[in-house]
Length: 205
Image 1 (tube, rainbow, N blue to C red):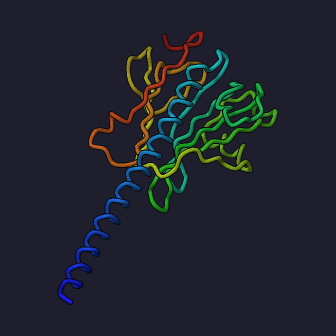
Image 2 (cartoon, rainbow, N blue to C red; image 1 turned 180 degrees about the vertical axis):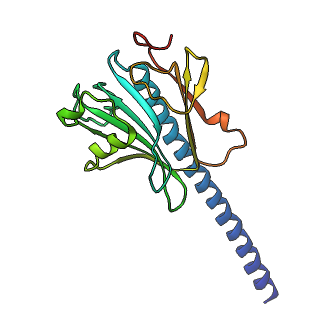
Image 3 (spheres, one colour; image 1 turned 90 degrees about the horizontal axis):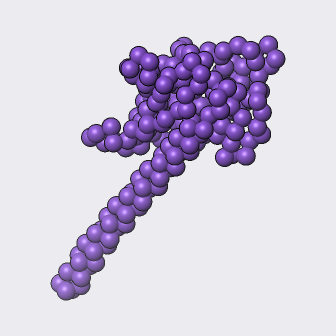
């Protein structure tokens, strides 16, 4: 009986060790998978920003008045931008790239939608609110979710400074820095990706 009891204890201990090891492996695998998602999206964004056509217009900034924090990129006149999803291409098409914080768990998501605005809006430069209103009926496509932290800033080559908002669609920032963090990291700079944009006439050098 004593030997049986000792055997039960040993087997229970081994089972707990194996169970803990399996949970650790699954957690590491899950984290690696999420990091791969962020890396893949970052590579796609870098490629698309680098290949923006000369006539494309880019504005970006926080959206005011919402229930949760949101940062919106508005890209106009850029057929082919983010078309890895086999979306139709059009010179009039507008692409909205949203970085939004979920009010329930404070996690961030990266979402996308594209639309062709009404004729009365095609010649205007969208603000974040007008762009969202014009595309209100179009559902968002979620690209990445569950991010702990997201931040964006733009480098003004003329002023030699970093900005949190890019308002002038006629010129472009020299660089875009995008940080997307899935889990806490002691050095957020390690998660920052910097995108170069081709200059346009009258834009930053």
